[in-house]
Image (cartoon, rainbow, N blue to C red; front, side, top):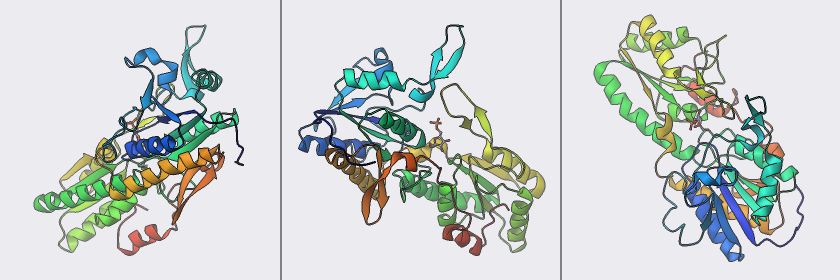
Length: 372
Ligand code: F6P
């Protein structure tokens, strides 16, 4: 979106929305320090936009003043000091209708009004696809807003990588290393589930790095017959154990991914992918099989150096963008630099794993079964 200098910025807000990712606090710290250099006041909106919609929920108020003191010593901490949520999407806000039913209602006009009432001149929105789609809608309604791409799933377009991804992959790889020894000791098949709803980046990168024997991605519907054949082939060569990595969004050929629940105003919750793969493999190979769900462990803990630096760069760049009069853009990594891309482009299409990319080819060339 074109640069357009609006009225002078005095007060900005930052929020973190969607599932947390290591590096959120580093972004907050960079935003606060950079904004201070411009003499701006900064507030954090609690839990996405809930601090504005339902401030009574928060004993200390829905808006938290952020100063250089409040962000001291948080760069290396997981989580987010202002909280986050993947409920209460202002575009699909769960609302009680006059007929007593609940429905998803677009509350962005209320939000735009509330931001003005709180004298918030601009917003830094840190989030994934959902949060940045909201940011794009707000930008279209005239809110000065810059997005920062976050998600451990790495499924946002127009940035080489999102922060949080490197930490998630590193931890998943460490877990695979640990699981190898117990799998080998017991001669078992270990089925390991990692996050990744619709994109298999974590499964693919950790699976290759952690020398998995099979990797099942949402992008490649699987046939467990080929995974069972791989396990038998290994056994024939004297390797009596196997590691199978499954993205939570992986699905069988002709089937659907495993959903636990779908609530109003929230994305569907996935779960059970590894369990169902393990059950079939135990049955078809006759091998003792265990499954492990790494799940939210991948979202916790200290960001890697890569993610810390990326988060700090993204946070500073977001403030730079606002100071330059930009709005409706997302900060994006385009090595060696950080650029700005229109939010509309970044949120148009999910970045899934291209089946002809070199990483997929590497997996195949290393003999890893991809379930097809
Ligand atoms: O958005 C990242 C993500 O980690 C997905 O891979 C996963 O499905 C989702 O969050 C789970 O989020 P929660 O359990 O917090 O609703």
